[in-house]
Image 1: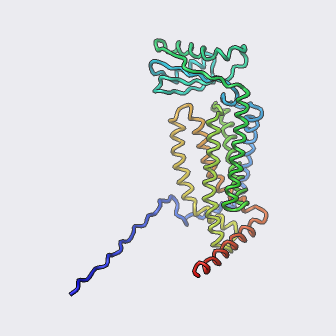
Image 2: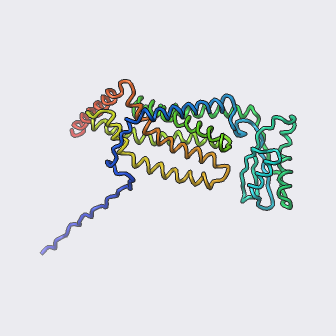
Image 3: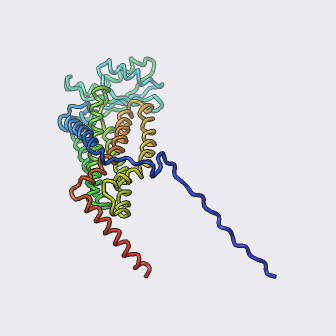
Length: 349
């Protein structure tokens, strides 16, 4: 009598569900009907950004860091840790009101950056490191101070850095246009480019405006944050565009405005969760990161907020108002769907 061999029973795999703040089909917000209100807000932000860009890169009238205006960077080491706030206050009263300080090596080293001194004699800039060292020695008596390094940045170098910042921004925008145009379509690429250009100008304008109320230097860290924002905004826009492209293939008879609304609502939960988690990190840097990182964190906070807004109210509505956008986008979807259906019988053969 042969023993029966029992077949192994298949164990059902647990389904992994992603946590969502909003269910995929729970929101039915008509974003497209509000596009004109969004365009008014964006026009104000972009105008502010253009004014700020002229002030920063052409006229040099903004509160720029030494990377753009020229100045001196001084490194001073101490035998014992020092209080950076006390050092900043005494340097301010000693003739360096806009000195930018950074602590290193557990508080035993200070990196001081001051702008170019224009109203003093020509040799005054070269004596800046010694003046800073003397002020710090008086501030912390009994704590030996040693001048470990200094570097001067001339106005010519600052002007070159301003030009390089402009070129870096333009190259980033051009790369976005090529990438989105290759992955989706030229119309999607132009819409993503407009949204990214909007984000860069909006954040630059807001930083410049805030500077009137809260003095803050516009330095290379802030420019780095602005370029990072361009990439963040693109990521969020690509997610929305990918859902639009998917729905274009499935819902060929649906009006384009309704299709765009449905696509945005379907990824709205993902967009909110991604933005909130990113904001949590930069808010920690904003409130706990210290003076040096405050400008960077503020630019990132504004950029995440504006980038989320533009992926919904700028990038997608551009597709709607594009001349011939509905027929061409839907025509491309039909052609793509038809080619996929023709390839299926060939694959079976």
